[in-house]
Length: 428
Ligand SMILES: [Zn+2]
Ligand SMILES: [Zn+2]
Image 1 (cartoon, rainbow, N blue to C red):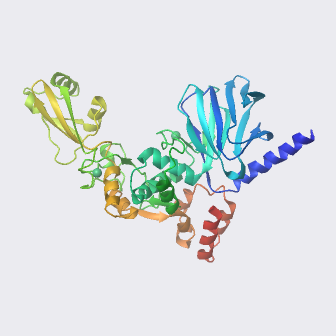
Image 2 (image 1 turned 180 degrees about the horizontal axis):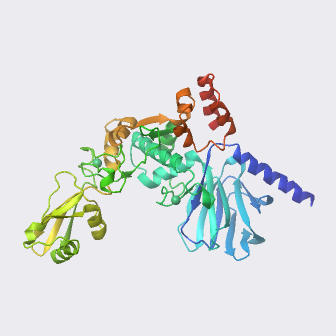
Image 3 (image 1 turned 45 degrees about the vertical axis):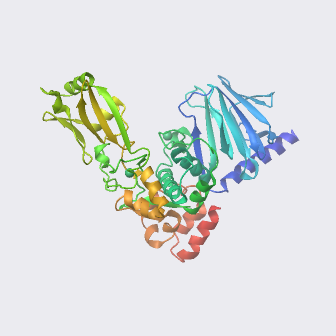
């Protein structure tokens, strides 16, 4: 009994100490997969295993593992093969707010991934399997997102632009999964996150050097940070792809990406298939040559025979790399000659990579692709009187409910400079 109380005390201490550390993000892993069984293995550091929220059942080190399986009565926990019982929740808390672990979903079987810091596991709300949440520092999360979305082979300034965009998304969508018990999921519904991957050092540096930096629009709201692989020489207006017209997602010319891998593509489609599809969409022509079409600059519609069809619809139907293509009739086929890869809205990644190669800074790159926006340091902005009065920006502070010291000083109008230092100090 004494031991149990002592263990409870240690467990509560560990959990409380988490809330005092750097700003944390909770990510729902494999959110759309009903995970029935998973294996957790310590790769570095030591982990406290806490069940039912308060009871410490073990401390495990590098090389040790735990196995979890989901049943109607809860989570069955085994530690290095030994049965520990069935619990409503299991937390693996990295001691000293550190640690690295691997996670393998064994039912269904998915590739093993590595994650930093902590894992919290309980039954999913719908009872279909486990909910696995990785709680970790913002900087580790952003490093994982940048690598998942941009790979590891680019200049530092490019990774800084991608870090700023991922942080902008994080701050604007911090409560997207509040009802599910975490902040963001790890799929493309939010931002792709596959754990720490190869832990590319340049990405870590980019995330650290841009700490707190985001992009805001003229209303001082975080922007929708859309990006794509290659624009083919011209980006798209947002309303040509989605319904919403956003003042900063405007079409811009881009010479930087034209020689890059995603710049050109070609596809042949049977003429009969193309003609039948167009006929179903109201385009009927007497002469098949009338199906030919050119886009010297980006258009919203494919036009033939005086009728038109949205290019996004055609792209989806035929699985095309982009909507930026010309159409030519050649024998029994139509030949589509296209430019770019992706939806074309916002930043062109291959263009941005080339701008970074030529020595341009992340701010220059961002301002080129996102019109009439500002690149600001969110933490410093909130420490100036003008910005503090701006409820809109404050509204998007993901940490406002979790760092009481920050909230207090935001209401205090005196000496913003020393407060700025306080806030920065408080983050680390
Ligand atoms: Zn999501
Ligand atoms: Zn481009």
